[in-house]
Image (tube, rainbow, N blue to C red; front, side, top):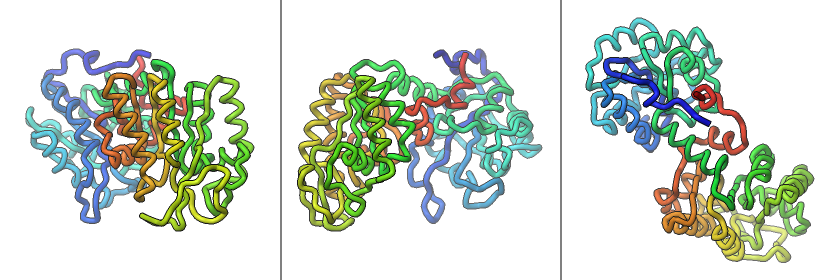
Length: 401
């Protein structure tokens, strides 16, 4: 699939470019930004546009203000961090449409950037309202989207705005789409996917899509407990695991579909059982025939790690979404760390293309100290998941040539 990129927009000198970024970054109780990753990763697009002589007006959502303004959800808290990352003056405008914006655009200098107020202060944004989108882009000549992480939503600033002006993907969005296409749509096979999560019910679409696309599927996290039950492992119960009894038949169906599509499902061979759900809780590693009726299944054991790593060595591409255990609590991050380190090692040696995404996954890989050693880490959560589920993302679809 071919998409419009910045080079397709022609001469941008003197033009006003409205850049849809995702500056929805985490903040602490004092409204100070605690993680600048999304800001940092959209900076190259802003710099490229400025180098081409464009005046850049940045728009974004922030938090969940439900269609009305409030200080807690104001993008003015993000402006200083954007200015620091960019090394250029960022002028904040406390609205995103209307005369105030038009005036600020007319008065802006070539070496500064405008940041407009939170798009979601208007309920029309989430409704995908065309009239709002036209009002939004009125001061601009060109529209560029760098917000892949919001591309699964047909919001006004993502779709209708792109349709109202000559438009293209920014560097980050193009990079995301390219990496995910190489990871799932046109991968070098064999292709392995690692999917974790607490419940089968939340990842049904994902699992059903992946068993038809990948060669090996590692099912991990709490949802593996339901698959183990479906496989006949008696020791898994509702008190010691995240078993979903009503999803056991569904798990069997997924395994049947996998078999029909020559997809090998890799499930835990051993489990780490803790006496309580707490960091550093007393624990033991057990095989599947010796699971105690009480306790908490919080990680997979060394046999499982060894098997996943062995199977990974047979593959050329890895797509990862979700940790193998309760990685937030030591020592139950052990399996995730070991598998992540193996993936990083294979990636660095040129044997594996590794693509990962989703908030928990990124945190888990950072915890393992290997996030920078993967081929690609997606900034997206929901959009990454929907891409893996095989769904059309409106914010990407609108950029097709």
